[in-house]
Length: 67
Image (cartoon, rainbow, N blue to C red; front, side, top):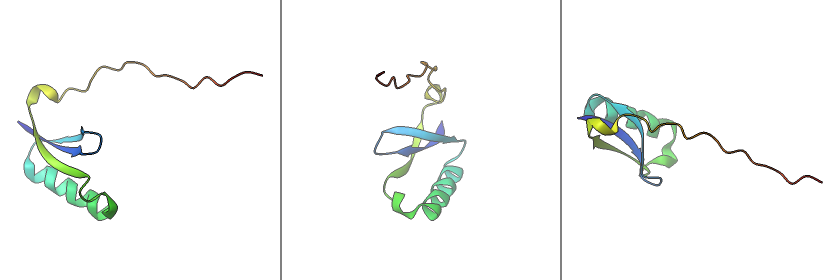
């Protein structure tokens, strides 16, 4: 099991840590730097198989209208 720092508003793990202690330490540092984010981030357990990032699906570009 690994630990993750998750953004509750987008329901996404934004960083992974090998221990809860490291994840909590990272959360405290983020809140110290960005106090308005308190309550937005939390430490969660993450099953090992979900650690791998999703494959890149490419990017989309804005295509403005031509005159």
